[in-house]
Amino acid sequence: MARPDKAAAVAELTDQFRSSNAAVLTEYRGLTVAQLKQLRRSLGENAQYAVVKNTLTKIAANEAGIDTLDDLFSGPTAVAFVTGDPVESAKGLRDFAKENPNLVIKGGVLDGKALSADEIKKLADLESREVLLSKLAGALKGKQTQAAVLFQALPSKFVRTAEALRAKKEEQGGAGTPAPAEAAE
Image (cartoon, rainbow, N blue to C red; front, side):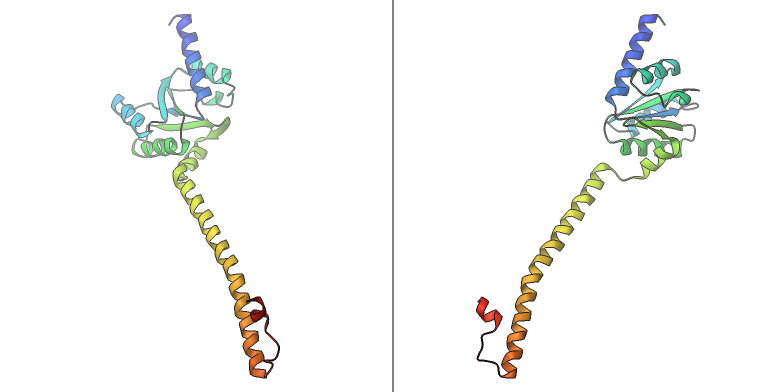
């Protein structure tokens, strides 16, 4: 490959590292072209899976400010560049690796922080962003309901207490003085 071609490949990979919020490095040795195609589909629309040259990708990662991946560039390497929800892509990789043991997750980077293969698997165990947001919304709604019930309970408890005091005074014969509930009404 000519030198300008290598420079263009490095520039393209650098742009992909910069524009993605996560990148996962894998070893794909032993996978067929059909299996790689299936893997690309399983990652979803927010990820691009590319077979890369180690030296060029290492240079591109360093130019993008990512130097924590240097040890992972050995053997046949492919990178999943994730621009959307990293959990969805991590789940796709994990599930595909379960069915196809030839796919080995080496590690990756998420928002500039290096991730080991185990951390990527833990990321895959998380629920998707939409599910987490809906759970948060449900929890907030529940807290608002609890607050509304509490605020509503205080005045009604006061009224019941005042009514109980008035009834007790009437029983004791103290009907000559008005009760606090009657004064408030």
